Length: 146
Image (cartoon, rainbow, N blue to C red; front, top):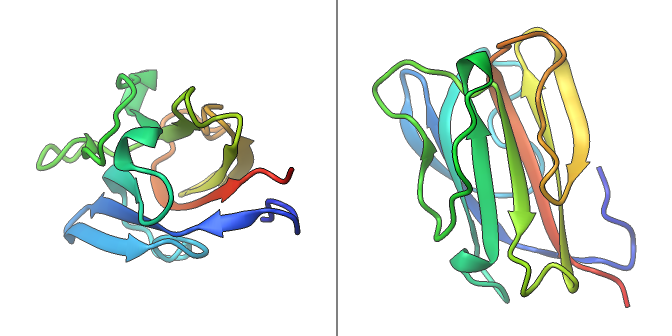
């Protein structure tokens, strides 16, 4: 997945709450969690490590039966812990104050539906199979080419 040659990617830290493993912290580059391993993602957060602040990126989760969370920011964990509720979709966007200068592109890997996306700038990433659990995400944040 590419943002284009002219874009400079911004490093991010992604925290996933993974079934049976708990919270795991990753610096993004490529897939977060092995897409071939079937462990459900139950919550996540995203924090830029450079240029942007944690309040510049917003994200939401979709759970069983299409239940959507509100938009989260400030690198808060979005989803659940200890309730065995998988995420079945997600979305990421930038705050309006930075959305003209930066963009976000993302994909999700699901148990049965495989890879969905790329999605951009707040589009909901959900699988075609109802309530198919999310097992991996890929998020790219970059400055737009001028």
